[in-house]
Image (tube, rainbow, N blue to C red; front, side, top):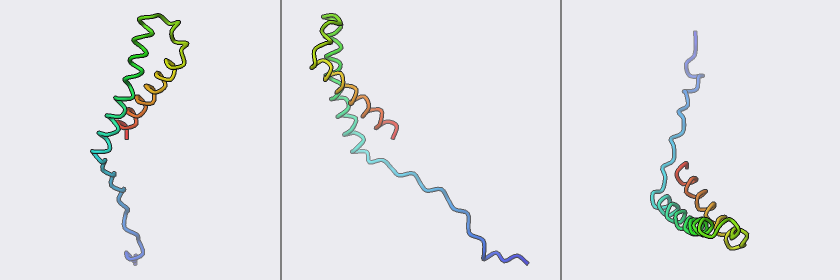
Length: 78
């Protein structure tokens, strides 16, 4: 005779956590704001040629834009 009390019930997978809509919207807005310097630096590089890319502020602006893009991607994939 098999005792059914010794068996454990099958476990259910954990329910996915809900996103906080306010935090998601805030991160998207901050990401878009961080993209603005990079877009401006790209426009200046196209207008004045690649030689102006040696300016440290241009490099910093592009890094800030990459951070904004990363924040947007993280927000949308989370």
